[in-house]
Image (cartoon, rainbow, N blue to C red; front, side, top):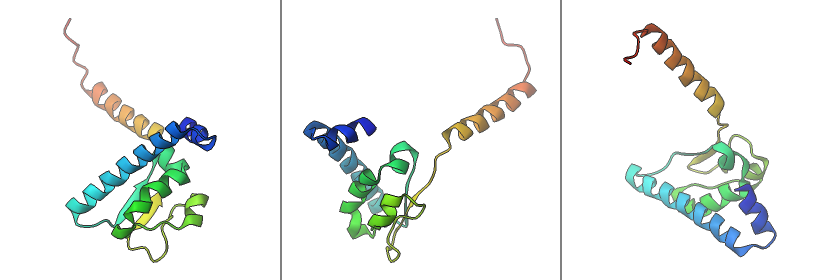
Length: 123
């Protein structure tokens, strides 16, 4: 996404098209879930793109205003934890991902399970 954003900023229309398609796809997914769940209370952005791209967050949320998903532009640019407008019916948050920590927890759990199951493997 960093590469696409840099290319789009320097006028590459194909890069901008790729970003537009990506954002529209996510907005459609949120809209689909909103239909199934009969509304949205919270939208969370996380991971590299979700945590670091105000442009992408804004582009995803813009067509979802009718669902009550309303970003505060200044908060979105600043990247604080809560980026929706105060009166927005749906909260929009940025949650820092901890992929490395999660992987470490899984490995520790697997290692503890494996050490108690010390039966030799068949040859």
